[in-house]
Picture (cartoon, rainbow, N blue to C red):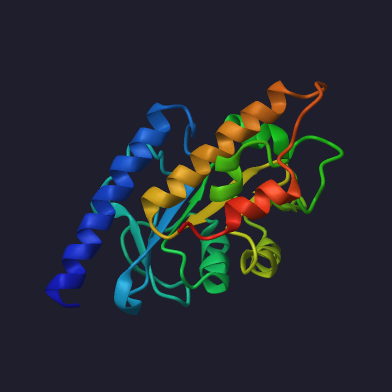
Length: 217
């Protein structure tokens, strides 16, 4: 591996540890829940938080590095949900990072009955639409069930984020900062959604959503 790639990997390891600690300190993940990954450039594989690790206490040097067949190349054993990340990367070749959290409000929404499985959080704010778009609800699977990877692969080519029923969100981004911003926006919108339950709500209209999706000039 050349020096440039080594330098990039070191930077990404430090960034994962730093931003993961911020998520943990702000209550967006608890205990050993959640996992985060980053794609390395040049086809050099990807980094993933290790199994049973606390996102608030990561050692950058011990992060798992895997190849695209899922084999561990360096670091501690990876999260048991590595297949979930790999499936989304395969369906979204431009995704540079993936954040999977058990954040309180998004996890709470994932437990509600009667959600629209194709769009489980309504378009309440322009920021949610721009960062998340339509959010499909993935049917419940036992944690670690590899069948979940195939379900996500079938959705991720059209959706940058999904909500796992009775579990939590999986959010991709062009880089780690972008994926975290999107995950934070999803959590905030889930909180708003729960606060508004039972109240009359003005959703964004189709025309308003289409306007948001137009390239900025």
